[in-house]
Image (cartoon, rainbow over all chains, first blue to last red):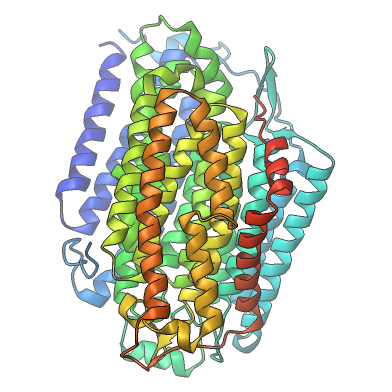
Length: 99
Length: 539
């Protein structure tokens, strides 16, 4: 199995995450899509680190995990506030503002 | 086949690791460190200072920290120290995680000025206990008994000030990031506090929370694209340092060559989202409308500046030599941004939304300057960012003062006849609108000239973009003049709308913004020279 397979897998996971963000209506699931994209990126980083024989990519993956955790904290707080106010976490019901 | 990892690495030194300790030039980093330190102290103030003295403590601390950081930055700039942190010099190229060079100093100083003005407007109390724009309790459901209790108990969300400082630190780091990882981290550090600040408006909290959710989801989405682009560029060049990427481009020929263009475009998605360029602009109107008005002004000015600083660095230090492969697409984005921003601003009926679409159009104008690919382009873009930001903060501060029954009167029809009843406020707002339109004797004119002139010299694409830019400006002139006509030549049906008298802090912010809009229109030479002498990137 060559290393390029890992890159293809990362790309596929990233695409699945992006499609999740675009198609799903529940804010939590949308957010999970974003997390999947970040983790797919981690896979790509680690694979490229292996390709180039450097450690930078692995270190970057750790940084990304920390950032993702911070993003979860902020994101869930916002989604919770919305859910309490509207009794719904659907991104479609958040539509007070229109073009 | 991947060899078993253990066999290769057993007993051997890890590849590519030479443990050279990083050098830190703490003097060059001191402005950022001061802002971060004061923000941390602000968190402690939130925990330990009693409620009745918390507002004064937070505002005083925040302003003192920002002014101190600005003075340090001026000291640094006067001594012309261009320095880097986490420096390593390999084969002549300067690789640093944080690069404090001319553009970085210029942009950081501007961000600090914007932050001071922004905090002055955010701290406006209008006679209340806490800052007027922010809810007394962020976690309380809008309209609930809990919120009423919090209001009666005199609580306030004074944590907005440390949050602002964290965002400011991220913004200062963003245009000085010398590698894509640092850029990603600073992108998140500046974004996460802004997501929260967006959702904390005192009035119309449902809209505010909705704006916060949209901003957060779309922002996280776009930063994931930025990160995947970073991964591809890392795969392409074996490094996330911008000079390394630049050095890898002319070599070419490797089997990973195909990663360059997708990587560049994905990184561009993340950056263009932050400035609100057109396919990625959908969050701007909602967030600008929903966020507390002082936050909108600060965000519009400072985020745009930081993001364009990062774009300049990525373009001019990293990927310029491959520009034939990506610049046509970005030129299309610039043209679309100008056209869509200008045309959609015509149909708006809400002042904040209208200014949001105008900010989209302005992002397009600035992109024209970025695509000029020479030093005058860089200095023109920096000048534009300064003048646009000062005008924007003052304009949103005025929007926050026009009230009906205590809440902001943002619908355009409510602004009818304002010029008769409040000549000073309406006059200042009209002047700022003329600056947005780019009328001579305002900073907007000088700024447009400063970005269009290098673009004109850069070739046919530049000329096309400038022509589109001028047409788009003409459309926006119509929009702004319509508001001026509305304020001065339309009878008002609504006497409830009045301009509240602000404290001295907001007055300072508005006066400074409007005065600089005039000064940069009439005597722009000093700042143009400063931005020109600060326009050389260290690479």
